[in-house]
Image (cartoon, rainbow, N blue to C red):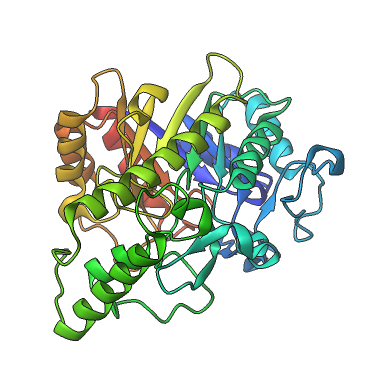
Length: 376
């Protein structure tokens, strides 16, 4: 199995990172060249405990003349203007292949500044963290973000995160919705009803919004905890999904059109077409455009099952990768065995989270996982 380890630019530029990555034996390091807001621990640093990235930012130079209405911010929590590029070049000089890790539609700062381009639910509530792919300005922004991120860099792969819609549960400051909404309610609240999305509906937009809102209220009132949404007519759900997938395809097409020919494309995604978030649901045409699909594998109870289902559903030429974490509150009891299960189910790649967040206490898990992957 190929092993890709994820890291932030400040991780890579920290003294000792390159030697640790080389000793770990990862085949590739994915560097975040655009990323959302975060407070990231820095357990390998001798001078600080965390980096507070107050807002989403591009870690490449932001040229004012390159951007339209939607323009990424620059990060003042890193010293270099091009920390992402510096990190990639450092890896290249060390002989370690580098990938561009690009987060596309997850940007709370732009969402607050431009509420007209964000996802809106059936009650008209805006999700400022979620830029809507149906909006032409969002697709233009995502394409430019990608082009500017990879410009002038020697990259082994481009890894696309949030290449599609985000929804109700991912994510806001001090989130207080965890466990409140049943899965079906969260799914319905993640359907975008903004004017751009509604413009693609062949039904009365007001009536569709009302149907969605009534179904949300019904499910909450009944306490139904399943994914069942039988209260909506099938033709409505099919239409909503079709509009969402068309927008996602248009977003991905605009992004990929900016990349140099032949570069390896890796897409974070999920088999369930209704999933939103960092790994949004795959559309029917997505496998035709990419070399690998990364599935969420942080839950060992379901990771191998998801890989097996993907291997059955996706073309053989598309590599299946499983995204696992070494920084969960509860470690995987036997991470080597889990990696073996993923390989047996059909995973050709292991994506490791996270080479900067996993400090000395959790580094052995990364070592064990990497060794197990290379043995399979």
